[in-house]
Each structure stands twice: as structure tokens, then as C-alpha cells.
Image (cartoon, rainbow, N blue to C red; front, top):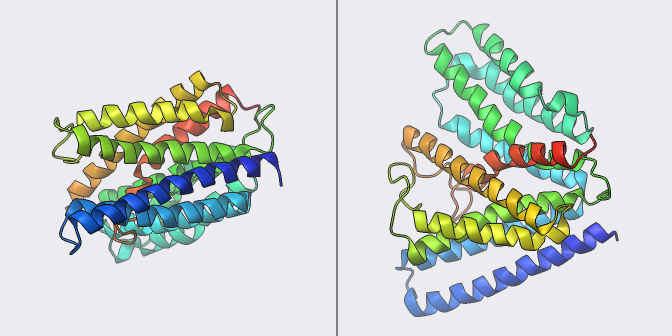
Length: 316
């Protein structure tokens, strides 16, 4: 077993310990405050903890299986997220070829390119080649009604659900001097910091939240929750510098950047949901909504994190 795998096991054990404590706290709160399931806050907390157990187990298994496990996990996440996104768009029969290309050609090919480490192609495949292919496929069907809107929605879905998300497993392709064989820890660092920021913003918001940031987009987000969550996640990132090629100051600064991008990504995705008239992207994950509801922060932070690390630390 490599040193990277030992560090992953330590990290997962720490996360498991936190979830055990959260599960116990949720059980006690339910017995005292919500024995009949009437307290919405307690029930939501317990649903979130249960969902986190599932997500931590899946993420842990993928990390332990290495590159193939990570590529398959995020490939599946992209497929599920793309399905959720497309469900909320105004597609017609004339979009079927474009949609089939997105799901069964473009998505798997993007992850294949990452698996074989072809940076020159996976970095431009979707924003260049796929963006040209999709309108061609749709135009060949001859349906011009709302053509620009329809094809733009599919293109945007691919960018959000496939291109941006695929930058998480793309971290495995980076060659960082002195960090060989440990890139799995970069993925763990990104996911832990971004997701913990979401949780901590929720907790701080419930404890101290008074001033709403964008009530029309996300009524639950408050200035106090954002500041408390961002600061806590930044400190957590600095404390996790041992699993990265960064110093504590660099890890903290990077954590702040990806936390900010994750926050604004959440607002953008909330704006799309409000435009579509829905509260959640789906109902697959109890307490969390759909896959996009869990990925919205990662969607915007992953490409930024990838390119900062690539151009500052990597030799590729």
C-alpha cells in the first residue's frame, strides 16, 4: 500500500468519525425534538447525514480504486447530472440527435480522453468540437422553432455537467514534481474543502444567519453563513495542506478561491432553477435534491482549481 493510500485512509477515517458524531447528534435531536418526524430542521439534518454516508463511501471506494474508479464515478455523476439538466429544458423531437450525441458520444469520449491523459484534446473537445457538432445535428432535423434557445440549453448542459465536472478526474493527469503518485489526494482536497464549505455555510447560517445575500435566488444563504462557512473552510484547507503539494498559506489561499467559486456557482445554478420554476434539480439524494444540487459548487471550482495547479505547480 502506497503512502498516498495511507493518507487517503486517514482522511476517510477522519470523515467517518465526524459522520459518526453527526449521526449520534442527529439521533439524540430526533428523540428529543422530533420523535414523530414533525421537526423539519432535524429531519433535514438527519437526511443530509445519511446521504453523506453514502457519498463518502462511494467517494472512498473510487479513490481507493485509483484512476479508473475516479473516472467511472465522475463519468456516472456527469451522466446523472446531464439527465437532470436536460429534463428541465424545453427539448423537442428535433433535438433527439443532438441529445443522443451528448449522452452517448461526447460524454464518454470526454472521460476517455481524460483516462488516456490527452490534455490537448480534452481541454478543447467540448467547447470547440462538441459546440460545433450539436447545432449541426439539430439543424439536420429541420426543426427551427426556438432553435437558438434549444441548442444553447444543450450546449450549456454539456459545459456544466460534463466539461466542468470532468476537471475533477483530470487532476490525476497533472505531473507535479515531488508529488508523483499522490494526485488522488488533490481530488480529495478539492472535494472535502468545497463540500465542507457548503455544510459549514449551512451550519453558520442556521446559527447566526440574519442578512440574506440573494433572497430571490437562494433564500437560505446569508451573509453571516457565507462569511462563517468560507472562513472555516479556508482554515480547514490550510490544515489539510499535508495532503497537497502546497504550503499551509498556499492551501488556505487556494481553498478561499475554490470556496468563493463554489459559492457563486451555487448562486448561478439556483438562478437556473428559479428560471425553470423548481426547488431542486432532482430527488435522488434525500436531503440534498439531485446530483447537480451536490455538484453545483464543484462545477465552478473544479476548472479553476485544475488550471491554477496546472500552471503554477505542474510540469505538464
